[in-house]
Image (cartoon, each protein chain N blue to C red):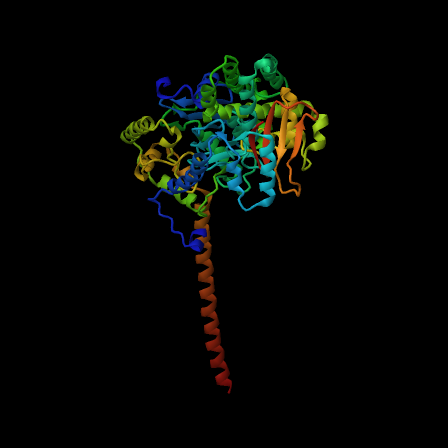
Length: 260
Length: 317
């Protein structure tokens, strides 16, 4: 019936899968081609050209420029917060390893915690292994180039992101009594984790950042560049009042990395 | 198999581990990768005991995307079962409002348990679902024990007999089914009806001989080796084009002719699989014929009556 309506005639000798898939692949490929998982160091001129006719953003870029030296972009695939967080923090550890032993301890213990919370051991172990491999390489002082290559390998990078998502999910469920007050849409914390935290490409919100920083003991400052009237970006430290290890730039729906 | 794939790829490592973990058949399920393609697996599951599928043994394929476990596997049932269309990809998602939410921490085992638990649920007209009567499903369940897979042979005796130990697995399957939903992939070009067309196509190809199956297996292994970078794509002989594949499209190696040949040897139940609506179509035409005969009869009678009446009236005048 639908065929008649749309004037479409089914030809059983043809294979339409190819056309549909080709189109979908093209779109995905475009994003992949145009945006690397994590970019090289960039100057803020990139942002300035992006918002050429936008005075509000021009003022805010000027503000950021006065306080930060440069930036790094991440791919806008919904995983950007986790991707940016992982890259910025590991890069931080490469330069300054004073926090490394503490972080490694937390990271290796996290697997047992997740399993005790009821996560499936078999798959958790798989993600944790890759997660620890990356951390160990950073601990062994690999060069910046090696690190960049490792972290921009899609397979490894995605595994790293999955495990960060699992850590957030675990922390939210462990502290359910507290976080249930912040879950929207009448969902339980568990449902929220299944729908908004664990699946890939789900964007991160305040609640994700709060949970990740608390679970790993890492401090972040986020600069919010939005449509607000002020000439300056609002900043927020996670947790409140801490001295930040890493700096992220937020634009509506996206996170990038900042360097002071 | 190891040499064929990059061991640096997390997907390959993960699938190797899963294959190892799932090597031994359990009472409810058994699943293993094909010898020549780590991204295509074949499974055998037992129909849930407290359902129309009790006693049934069902076989099918699992196609893994190249970026598994970031993207979900698709499942294709091969044994006629009366719940899911055969030779049609069914995808797995969380039910209800969030259909794309596959979680990377799920595994092939999760997907299998979910489909076992999902079998007794009502199809409710979802794409890829069939609503056969309990009687028809029971007949198919019985027949399923003799069903043969061109790759795995007889599947009726793969699973060890059921003991008390199965209760826990069954419970787990039920819980998963409440969380996960299956449906056929949405036809993106708006041609739903073609799936039935494809199905009848496949059941009309009745040639089943040793030579065709041999030809099939060679072409299959050939396509599997030529295409290791996109392994899922090399073997995507889904009958219905409407089930647009999520795996990066079928390549030139899978021509329509090849598809038809591949289907032939496994289609053992054309009769059983000929769906209800074929039979109901016959009843409908019979009804129509009787109705028309009656209508014509009535008209003739009326004509006669009118003619007679006039004659009568004329006489009176």
